[in-house]
Length: 476
Image 1: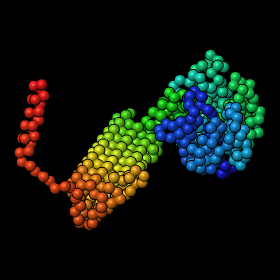
Image 2: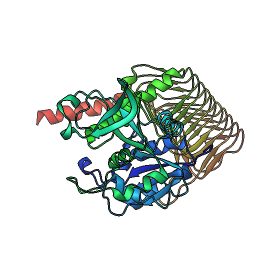
Image 3: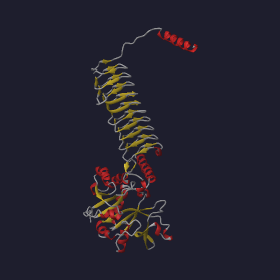
Image 4: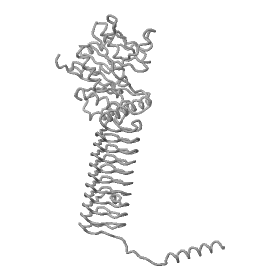
């Protein structure tokens, strides 16, 4: 068969009781994404998402809503009675396919390369069933793979899968385990799946029994070792959740460093799976890059900065302690230290957002500067304008938000209050400590300060009165 139709089924119906959570097991997150999403994204690099079938059960509507944007299909397992029972629900959905690869929704470290390897091995060897195996450091508790020995050499053919409790003394040293990831010829699977029994402590239908059924009929059941045993690790407890999170994040930092990114003390940084970083960028210790953050080339992200769904251009400098969320930053801009970019912020090329400056739904043009102790919300700042220390845009009147517009090359003096809606024209000046409630035209001065009064000698008389009052009080 030159172009066999290949589907992927993902088991995602379980409750995850040992996680002690109301959240469905497969929606628990590591590296910024739900467990099931990691598996789907890996599978989507091998087959079209429309050829991926998620078998859902517990909190099915919630899982469906979370995963629908990925374009996969869903099969509902209303009553959860084991892995074999889950595949029984797919009989109609998989009828048009020649082969199916079965993955677990709680095995988030599986790589696309490994999925492709199983697919190719299964098809090229014309196997009826292929089992992905692994050799973890401690195989205790897993079903062990007994391979058939031919002419004194261990072959790819499976002799048996032996559970921990049934191991003979000679089999105790077998380190190769069943990962629970399988490939089947669809016709061979569904012609036998109704022969599965429930004579086990849990009263469930298990896919592993298909191997024994096929073997008894002389069909070809093969085993393929995964190169990295971590890829087949599943999650049942919060401790395992934390372990796989750390493994996936370590993998991410290694991928970035191999691609030309410098990461100092990578064990201290938190980088989500969806983050991209350009070559020659430097990431200092204790940085968090979250969500779908994208960082260009030759940037510097200094310690204790946290960026979530932020897009940085090239040559951006992010100084210590800067916070950003759903913002866009142009090339060669400078942020922080201790700046905050809130959702909807757009920082233009070469712009500066400095110490303790907060930006919210505002656009700063090329080279605009707000370097100190400033709040800019619902505003547009033109190219080359300078916003003095202590300036705030009063964008909220208690009911509605209003916009402040500042033109190009404007100068806003320190400690200015801009009461929106208000417009400051191109090249205009606003005097320090002004409260601006009316528009300032282009190249004009806006100022609202009262005239300064100086009274010479006033301070001497004031101190004398204070000292006299203090002395009188002490004499009483």
